[in-house]
Amino acid sequence: MEITTENFLLIGAILLFVAVLAGKVAYRLGTPALLLFLGVGIFFGYDILSFNSPELTQFMGMIALSIILFSGGMGTKFSEIRSVMLPGVILATVGVLLTALILGSFIYGISPLLGVGLSFPLALLLASTMASTDSASVFSILRTKRQGLSQNLRPLLELESGSNDPVAYILVVLLVGMLSPEGEAMSAGACVIMFFVQMVVGVLAGYGFGRSAVWTMNKINISNASLYSVLLLAFVFLTFSFTTLVQGNGFLAVYIAGLVVGNMKIVHKRTVVSFFDGVTWLVQIIMFIMLGLLVNTRSLLNPSTLILAGAVALFMTLIARPVAVNLCMLPFKNKFSTKARLYVSWVGLRGAVPIIFATYPLVADVENAELIFNVVFIVTILSLTLQGTTVSGMANALGVAKAERESSFGDAFQDRMKSAFTEVDVNEQLLLSGNTLSLINLPPHTLVIMVCRDGDYFVPQGSTELSVGDKLLILSDRNEELQAQYKELGLEEVIKFS
Image (spheres, rainbow, N blue to C red):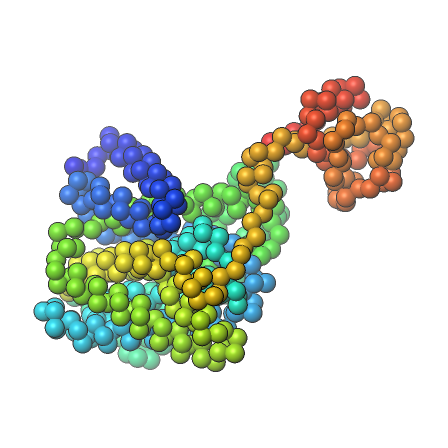
């Protein structure tokens, strides 16, 4: 079926609807929702919708990853990752290089036995696409499952997954450039220079744009609060595009910018965080569905492809990743137990990032590009199925799980509570019975929880003296009585908070 202008929205709406239902089913079954999003794409796949555009998929993946990495950085507290900064950075750089080399050597050795016969550069390219853990998968699974972990493992895993894509991206770009028909091989020195330029420019640009975003949002004074989210989204795309333009790594830049914004005070932060949470899920769904749509199921199920992918998945999960992690964390063995290092190895989830990286050989028309894409796709499915479904179980088995306290005053409380917030200006009639808070006439079950006076905010006590013009933030579960009281006191300009 060909997607035309007339049916594009209908098909898109159906895909999103089915994906959301799949996410609900996944939550009940304990299966990663991202895996079922891929399944939706495969189900509606290549033969039904006739979708075969690696370029469009790559473009959408770039947009989605920018938002996912920024949102992930914004949700990471710097106070939590400070103690794991060094091991996290080593895992995100040296760990990726070691994984690529170990896995690439294995693929180079095993491929002739399966009748594929990949050259070492091709084998290294295939390994490089899968060398980094997937931020979308790690953020989504750890936060959805609310998995508490001891020894600061959760911030370590989130830091690694959020910052290790640049190294894999650089490896993929270098190897694709060398292997594409029009490409030219770069010298080792040029590769090293490119790596450091990308990383340094990425960090500096990310920090600079993050601070600029915070300053702009706090100073711009927009009357419509919803536009602050749009403004920050523009900063995300500006950060990525400008950093890429000046030869830096855009993925690293948006993650750093997210860290900066998330750990500083900005106006309407709650609204912004809620907006990005929804947009992140939307782009994840779209990205995984598009990746599923791109698959040619006939070539995917080729026996040699399945065997190679199965062997790669097992070797990477049981040998390449554990060896790389243990070597990187060897200097920190007193800080992380053996079981903790094993858990870090196990939660090396692969997801959308490897598949998106696998579209680069397709776009560049690299030899065996379709085989690379199919192997990466199968390995991702196996990783999400095997590792993604056992994140909590493995934590319990290795003794690194801990109970994560869930707030009683989160979204569920806000949805169920009957109390209402209102804001009023103190007038003379309100102070007729006295000018201290304890003497003003308010209904039972009503509290003044904040006073604003000349731009200063403070929590009042019963003895606090009030003045005409003070602004009171009032919480009450007797809203009807309170509204009637306001009318009696001549308080007509009342601001209600939903």
